[in-house]
Image 1 (tube, rainbow, N blue to C red):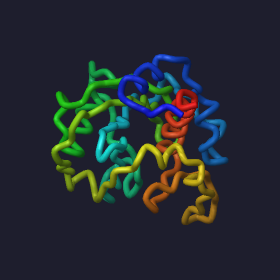
Image 2: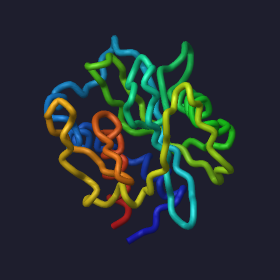
Image 3: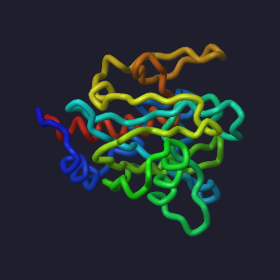
Length: 203
């Protein structure tokens, strides 16, 4: 089994992406027919920011503050809506700096995953994968981030961390359980595609 590193992950992101097939594996049952990007959706971007620590790769996830207009109280990846004339990569880096205090110039872009359309919010999310060689510290913005944690990439690739999660309204949805926290919805679908790609090159 191959060890994952920056160069291998970058090469993998240039191969054909599994897209909707991977998204459906972690999609809530009531969203399975609503994942296609639409022209009238507002573009947004999120960043899977990988960084090494103690011989492993990690990526930050944030618990969004309760007062935000979109995705309040949810756990997700750093990111947000694109500004005029901004690329997905630029937006992902800007939002990560604003939310987590990581300078944009310290993050190198490795590639993109497949865009994901959300009819519930009217957004198309473009996931971007980046790499930070060394994180000296995180400085989360309390106005946007209630809390955060760093998930090991190995946990994402361990299918024992996939659960059937019961929401407050009683419905069940596939979710990742990372460090005891459930990750579901759009974030889980994005991470599912990344996991599929990485599993293909590990074996």
